[in-house]
Length: 102
Figure 1 (tube, helix red, strand yellow):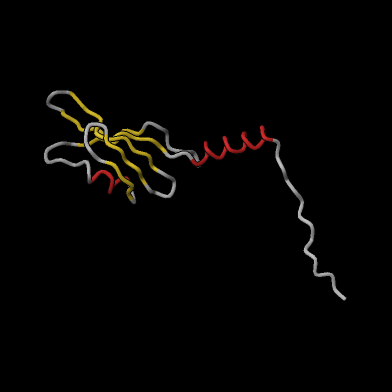
Figure 2 (tube, rainbow, N blue to C red; figure 1 turned 180 degrees about the horizontal axis):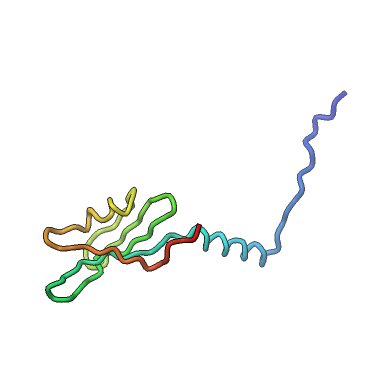
């Protein structure tokens, strides 16, 4: 006769404080990079933030308008910029957060 019972699993329970610390580390590792899409007026030496975005590690981007009515999820930064384009208005992508260290 064979014992078909599963081997007991070890429980690795963390204290609430340790679990919160783990969650904080996870959030820091997985946080999206923030950026602003700016419209540039070089003749007037002026700029305006059109939209704010978040870039995720897998390339996805979320964008929400500031000076223009835009909101959505996009496959890339490039595709997000397409909705901000206007004829004759140069855009600048300003990163708020540094590029993550690999």
